[in-house]
Image 1 (spheres, one colour):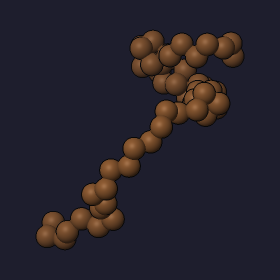
Image 2: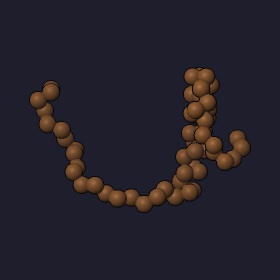
Image 3: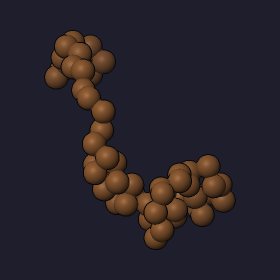
Image 4: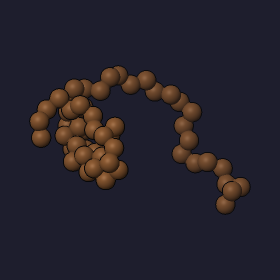
Length: 55
């Protein structure tokens, strides 16, 4: 298996623009409960980002 060559490898690099604020907000709202649970589980608040909104 180690002798197989990589597949689905594209050497092209595509530039992308900045993330839309609406997309960022949607992702933060979606992941917030999971990030909060991880933070509590690990007893470490470094995973709790400042979301800029209340739960």
